[in-house]
Image 1 (cartoon, rainbow, N blue to C red):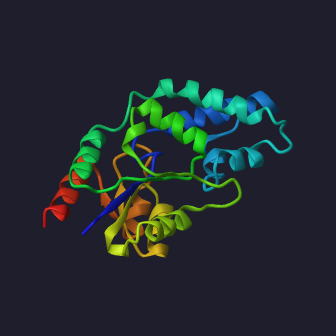
Image 2 (spheres, one colour):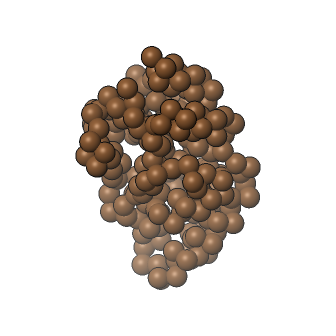
Image 3 (cartoon, rainbow, N blue to C red):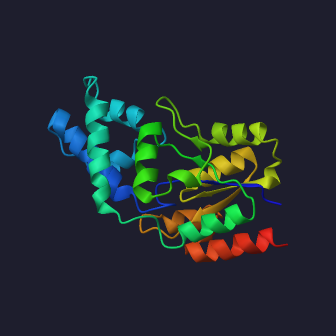
Length: 213
């Protein structure tokens, strides 16, 4: 029986990639004068924003992160809220006494900015965030199992990338692959053998069926 379902943020709770691209592109341009592509930004994913910017703007001054968070906060005008059905999915899980942490590669401040903008600040606990030096999702998932004395079958993750799926496989838990965002690489998920869901409602129904057994 599932006791905890962890959530990714970007591309899972909301279509936040336009926010990310605008904030990084503006920040890098502010400090270097260069205009970088979405692909260049995506290539730095895995570590948190401090680590990403360290790669994109080497030797930047200490003010860089302050500027980034200002740009990141402002860029949320590009999204209206979470994907349709996310609030209902979380409510269903909470009604079933299933805990819903966040496990994300985002930094702590950007994570809180996004959850606040989405109106989801009170829906997740704990909120585990990324590291500037190396990807740490698998380690965070292991820590949740240890801290909550969970067996692998009692914990699952909802994420949108093959990397999320690989982290779950490394830890031995199930990954429900969110394939409802426009940004998702569906062929890659299919090729990786993901248990993928093209709508939030489909996953909500599946989770409800699991919990009602």
